[in-house]
Length: 126
Length: 302
Image (cartoon, rainbow over all chains, first blue to last red; front, side):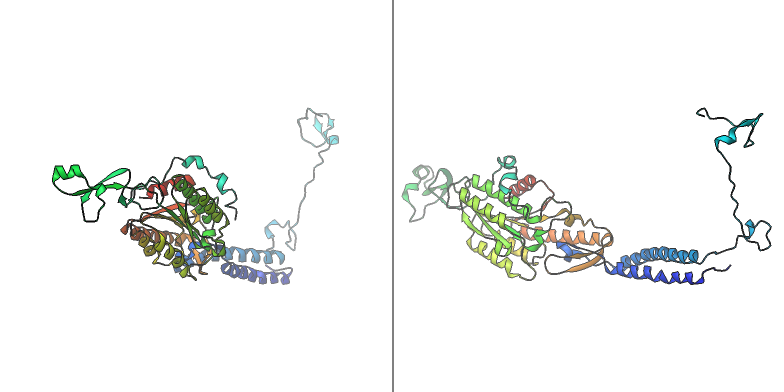
């Protein structure tokens, strides 16, 4: 395994952004006027701990997303040796199969059309 | 404030026209009306006998009772009098709260209810007065008087009232309003207080119950917005009070039960203190039909 663009791994440094967003979000809880605020108890520690765990899960998803983006930028990640078609270097290759599906391919030569499919059903509109 | 421009026309007066403040207490007043008076003397309805004491008017000496029982008894009569309705509307800053599910601010709903009660009283021939808790310079107290003009004055004052003032920073606010009523309200007066009771000093309940002394009938209606009744917010919020600059950051799911318990304790404190003196306590939601709220208050008047 090797990376083509190693410097793209630097994108991983942006994982600091979710950390920042996480901290800013904690500071900016939604503020609203409420006359009976004096009767509302501050959140007990247990609730705060639960809130932190939820936030950590969210932070983990965000950090993983950025790490995945960094790895994608530094591609290829893994050589596809199993798909190599008897090449010495073992590099993979792309194969595209193109079939002409135009009207001219429908001309019959005996019982066989040009595209080689025996008994190919003809469309009623043509 | 959006409440007041249509106060006189939008309220369904017809729905409460049949209601009257039914008095059960013996009342004393200066105007002729439909309520009983504690003052006994010349009048229409016979009110019983009592022993003659020197100085009594001999016109009321019951000769038939003298022949029948051999005692000097004086006939007494109940004087038909009215009794004043004193409205006390909380216009402190917290009453400007509306919330997400109420059609009107708490002060707006309290004003509509107060105006309806004033109208009922005026129709009954009773004098009315209006006092405020807070409200700043916009809150103009209305001295007790009777007639259509009195109703118009009360209506005009309610229309101009704004939610201002901080009961936490200005605890004398309560004393200024209630001191006057305690001194001036006659025996048999009806005092209706419309307040959220939030941010008021803890001993406010004692002030209210003290007014119920001397034969006065006191009804305290706690006016709350639906959001205050069930705390419907989600997640972590910062709640800022409108009086006292209290800021609380809390997880509403965890704090809801404790908040509702504190609200119940507050209501129980007022209810217990008020009932000890014969006063009544009830809670009104700003999402309720104001007609039902007025009926509840009228029904609570002794």
